[in-house]
Each structure stands twice: as C-alpha cells, then as structure tokens.
Length: 232
Image (cartoon, rainbow, N blue to C red; front, side, top):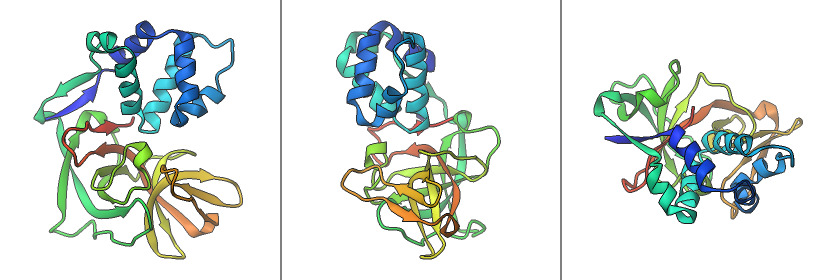
C-alpha cells in the first residue's frame, strides 16, 4: 500500500487556507522556495502564485515541505482538504534495483542491469511517466537531505527523461569513473553538481567530464512513517 497526492485538494488548501501575502512570504522565507519568490512580479495574482509554488514543489521534490508548512500554519484547512490519496496494490509496478548511489562522495557501485539475480522495488505505476526506462538506486550519504532524500532511501531514475537546471540527476564522472546523486546546473564552461545540504560543497567538472544517466522521478523512503514522493 502506498499513497499519492490529490493535487486538486492541495490547490484548494493553498487557495482557501492562505492569503496571497502569506504565500509570498512562504516563498521568501523558505530557502528551497526562494527561486519562486525571485520570479514573482507584483502584478502576478494568487492563482498564478499557487501554480508556480506547486510546479516548483513537484519538480524539485518539495511537496512534503510545502504540505508540512501548510499543516503547521492552517491545520483546520489541511484536515478539510486532505492532500493524500490511498492507492491499491494493483497500481504497483516492479522497478529493477541497480545498487547504491552516493549522496555525498561519489562511488562506482552499480549492478549490471542484466544480472539475473537483480532485486526489484515496487512503485506506483500511475505516478510514473507512461513511457520511460526506469531503475532504482539506494541512497548512501546525506548530501541531499534538504531535498528530503535521506541515507537509505530509494530513488527511482528515468533514463529516457530530459533534465534541466535544478533537476536531481545521477551523474557519471568520467575522469574519476564514479557515480553521484546531485542537482544539475549547466554554467556554460562548467557543470555544477550541487548538494542539497548546506554543510557540503558542490562538485565542479568540465562538460566533457560528466554524463547524466537520468533524473529522479520518485523517492521511496526507508522510514515507513514518511510518504513516497513522485514527480511528473
């Protein structure tokens, strides 16, 4: 059994539970949502602010951060507009587990995807892209904790999906011959692989020295008290 988001309820929760000024202040005060605030012009209305908040939260694995804030600041509306939906086991699909991935120092511990002894993990079919080439990795390290990716969690990667700046990707460092899980930023003459942990420094490499194996489309937490996160 797993849970999914009811996006209509989340939108209603933000619309009826908070003023435009409160939403703007949230974007300003929450460092992970600051990019949204930086793009908010004064003339943008409440509906568009909500659209941008939801888009940013979903794209960057921050839906749980958003919902935690909403629950703390308006618990009555949160209960009324329940953001989670229960899904049946019939909606589950098995994804091959290739091995561990470093969220910290890079590593080179990938399994052979054609290994007959490979393990599998289950995720919601309905929340993955209809077409894709998926594999799963177990996270080792704490460099992505601010993206709600903790040591021991499982991430689902889509190899066929394009990626943009800010996406969380599996990067192959060709010079070191190692993999790492980081946020991707193309800065022209160099690639920045940015941790989501303020205590850790980014990795800078030449564009010719990195290959992207895919981007994160889901997080399956090792702690059953935390909910899975899916990105469209």
